[in-house]
Length: 207
Picture 1: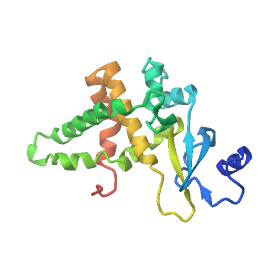
Picture 2 (picture 1 turned 90 degrees about the vertical axis):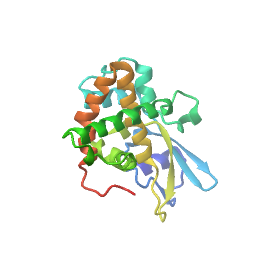
Picture 3 (picture 1 turned 30 degrees about the vertical axis):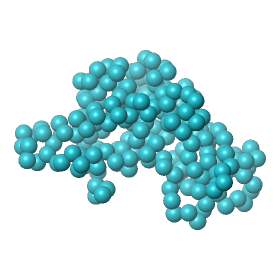
Picture 4 (picture 1 turned 120 degrees about the vertical axis):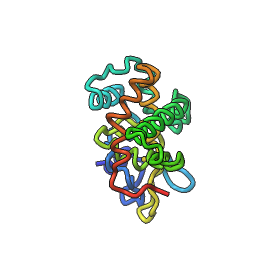
């Protein structure tokens, strides 16, 4: 269990008031270090090359769909990981967001009725971190995530920003497909595996 592993490592005393709230889907093997901060603790999530390859096999049926191993690992590396001392995915995010936005616009233009196309401000709500995380949960991107997340007091009503981290991972994945396979392949991936799930989730679009 996550907590027992922390106690054995000597990071937190048994009976501590801190727990990994909202991190139940992250395997204990991903937790590398617990760091003390003035207002609590943060946990460092890491992953191996095998974790990254397993993700690609789940999604694409091949661990070599993107042959560049360094790029594959960059997709999963949030800028908080090791304080940005290793290649992280932020430079890829804007490109991935743009591709997803185009795919969303194409989705609403399918019937040729421009009047039914939402405003851009509404389009962006379809790709909120919560929707992205929900749409891709079967891919288990958290199993390969590399980032720092807060550990919260058990009385806290806040949640660690895992959904936002996972959304940056997915946008970076889309960008990597664009860079390695081309724009047509990236749009096809979004059309077939992402956009429909984003649009038809049974929840109100977040304001």
